[in-house]
Image 1 (spheres, rainbow, N blue to C red):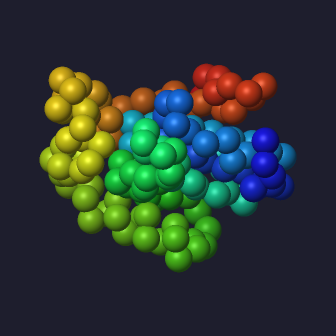
Image 2 (image 1 turned 120 degrees about the vertical axis):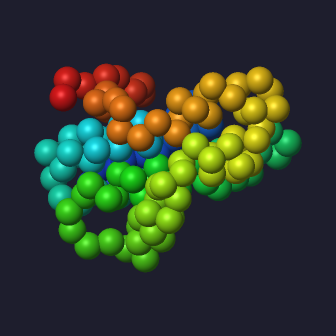
Amino acid sequence: MNKLFSQGHACIVGVGGDLPNTVDDAVGFAGCLRNSEAVARFAQSYGSKIAVIPAGERWKEDGSLRPAFEDLVGAGAILSYLDGSLSPEAAIALQSFQAFRQDLLGHLQKCSSGKELITKDFASDVELAAAFNVSSCVLLFTDNAYRKQSV
């Protein structure tokens, strides 16, 4: 694994096989709109240096990284519960979440990933992804896997 982020805590927003491994000597969490507050609170129990990384997706054709609207907004949701200063990138994620918060489902249905899922008859997955703070589940990256933590 490449050492891209170390000596801190990372909250990686996104799920699935396209989630990059960017955490080496750090504690990694997986978060999204559904568990944003729980992940932020749990991450803060580890310390104050926290990187929130919208994971994005990989294009199937060439494997290049595709930024994902749902990951950016999910990162912003998590950031809305964290204390401390924000980098310019974090501030944009937070502002994106605040701008779209009132109609998360509507905007997720219109973004690239949402349209793709709806076309493939996975509209209910988009609805699940749009549910805000409905889960207290926190996943911690341990031994090369994400494992549920007691909150």
